[in-house]
Length: 101
Image (cartoon, rainbow, N blue to C red):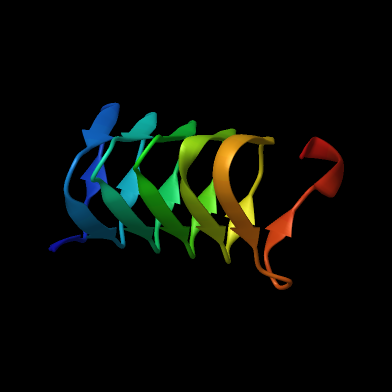
């Protein structure tokens, strides 16, 4: 697993296992086989594709779209949650506008 403590200024695709404690100032796509442990922040949108996994302990400023992956939310979503397919778990302590789900 890679552990990152930096700011990334581009859109990225994740196909491996990464723990992020920094900021991604762009959109994130988690592909099949990719695993993201987010303790930092994504400033735009997060897409979880079929076979991808996201464990959100930090914050996503934009929307999150689960298109067939595993999404566990313990942190904060400022945008909308689009639970299209896959498995989505929202912890009781997570912060998001339920009317946006």
